[in-house]
Amino acid sequence: MIVHHDRESDCLSLQLGERFDFSIHREFHDACLGGERVARSYLIDLGEVTHMDSSALGMLLLLREHAGADHADIRIVNAGTELRGTLRVAGFDKLFVLH
Image (tube, rainbow, N blue to C red; front, side):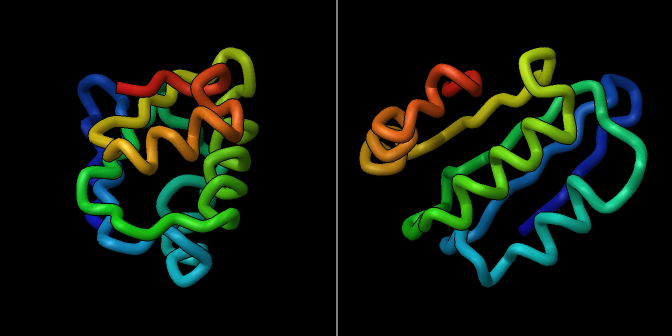
């Protein structure tokens, strides 16, 4: 996972690797949820992800809650067809902006 914080726009970007599952839970938590400070916006790049499990969905929900729930600005980008379908079936297209 590559994490970048654009201080000017206060956007935290995460570029995930092939696996978005429980194996990266601690790293995801430390990057997004570990501190008291909440970024203005978040960009989750799924372009390289080939495997995502239910714990990934849980991590996204925790991020959403941490970032302000209905007021959160979280964009999920570059999700392949299969991942996009999974996110839609789970109703995440109503909770997050999918690009």
